[in-house]
Image (tube, rainbow, N blue to C red):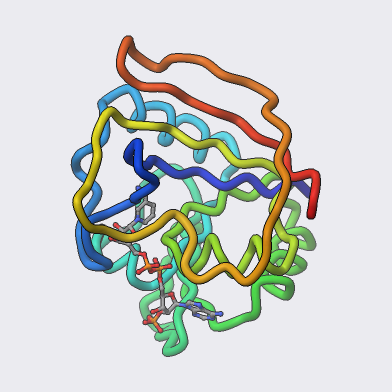
Length: 170
Ligand SMILES: NC(=O)c1ccc[n+]([C@@H]2O[C@H](COP(=O)([O-])OP(=O)(O)OC[C@H]3O[C@@H](n4cnc5c(N)ncnc54)[C@H](OP(=O)(O)O)[C@@H]3O)[C@@H](O)[C@H]2O)c1
């Protein structure tokens, strides 16, 4: 099973101003890219804080929300699931259920935990032409370094770059 991170960040590596901010500052091309790619995966995994900024499941793929207080009564068949499983257990379950590619869609805490646990094969990073004076870093509190291999670059529009990396490990 392949695990791909999807993130849009500013030129100085921020994914939001604050943890409760809805990301509404990305380009329409990035939104389209995100929508298409995550639908292709069929499942996206996000943290509780990210889900709360959106407030609803995104249609056309399974939304798995990692939270320490899962309220399963809010699950919606095939669309929305809350879980407190550890990343490795969650991915094993998704694999058993037949998902071949999993989109990990943030935020910073979730990206950091999956990366630290070596549960990432690829990163698809969109760089929006912005610099935030303060904000949430792509990864929260990483404890070590990682090496990447650049596998693709393209422009989504004349101002927005998409970078795809493979993890080659530290
Ligand atoms: N630009 C982008 O591409 C992008 C992408 C995604 C998110 N964002 C932004 O990033 C911000 C949120 O990032 P964040 O780092 O603050 O939060 P986050 O990673 O989205 O979510 C953190 C939450 O996830 C849950 N969680 C974390 N680890 C867990 C574990 N091991 N087991 C179970 N639950 C776990 C907890 O939820 P509970 O509190 O419910 O227990 C925790 O509070 C928002 O502003 C969002 O809009 C930006």
